[in-house]
Length: 316
Image 1 (cartoon, one colour):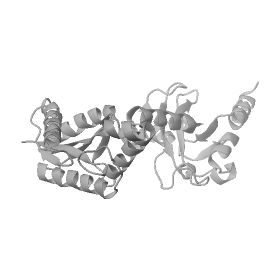
Image 2 (cartoon, one colour):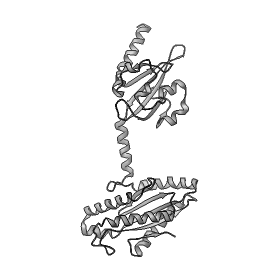
Image 3 (cartoon, one colour):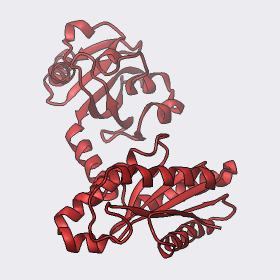
């Protein structure tokens, strides 16, 4: 087989690969845009060949693609451009990366695994860069769902205890650097065991779901972590809010739930479902103080119960 025949064979092979593949020349112009690439992006080869607009197949705004990074040697931009990247590529000397792409022609997002590699001539001169695109959307979506399951309470849809512990650690370290307070509200449904005994566990689950919704609708900043702590106990982590501000939020939640008038004939406090809350706040100085924040809120919650329930108590 002559050199020309070898080149023709290699070009035809790339065009018919089942993996979406395109090739750029040293000037960054598209010289191959294979059929799999057409299917993946919705853009035909004739629109791309001879242009440097390959980015339009993947993004709504002009940006550097992985093949361009290799051509221009702009490896310092990898962290900014890609959710994940590594060197070398799975296919040899090059780069690999992963990220979400907007796929403008198709109008939907795809999570792509991207590999690029250089092609050199016999003298060691770069003559082309090959980029392959593998659709990993289903895998990424499933992975994200599993990660969410690990930190979301199935019944209420709130974040769970595991998420709370992780978030508290993050917010605590941030507050240490910024010298901001961190506040916590611990909430318990009053006489919930009696509610379950009277109405049944199915209605008990509905009660917890209603309490969870009332909590979510009573916070507005989007930085709060609303969690189910366990059983009928809930908590809200409030970064950059002091004790008085947290108490106002706790009272808002208590009042909003009471307005729903969810019947609770077994309660000795009210004809309706009510909650008790303990509120604490600290300005972090050491990492160990995070445990103290929880202990103070828990202690205040028990005080609220001892003082007659259906109220919030500030930790002192």
